[in-house]
Image (cartoon, rainbow, N blue to C red; front, side, top):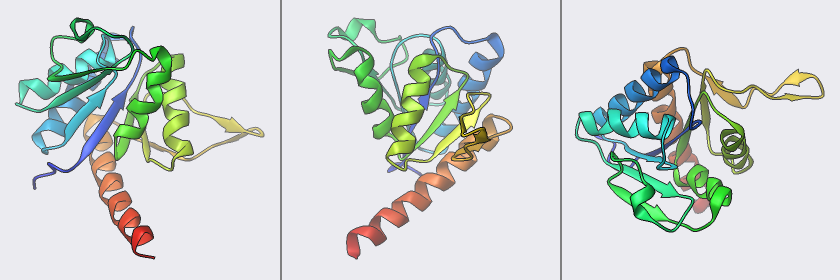
Length: 171
């Protein structure tokens, strides 16, 4: 089934483990094969890996860059968007997806997760952070077991969110 209207953000760190990079490539391939557009921060690490995977199967990739130069985008970004915002661009990355897949991560990834959760954008976590509030794990991050599970959960959550948004708009 085509998911052309679906935009899924994929977030993660600049210096991932080899395993996390392979997971991100597979996530990119699966998202693109489903017809979803991949949005990320446009640089290296998880961002480059997810874009590489998406491009391997003809997908469309968008990189929301922290600086002012499109040449800083990784080679697999189709549409580089310069923001000049530095880390503040993380809010744009998180809010651009109808769902967010977090893989591995660094401090920037934590901020993107926080922005998405604060806006009720579904976050799917694949070997990424967990958060505790008053010693109790916050279960708002939907846990995935592997790349296929992450993509399925992200697409399902994005579709559900789209339905919920339409219902809210009509009320």
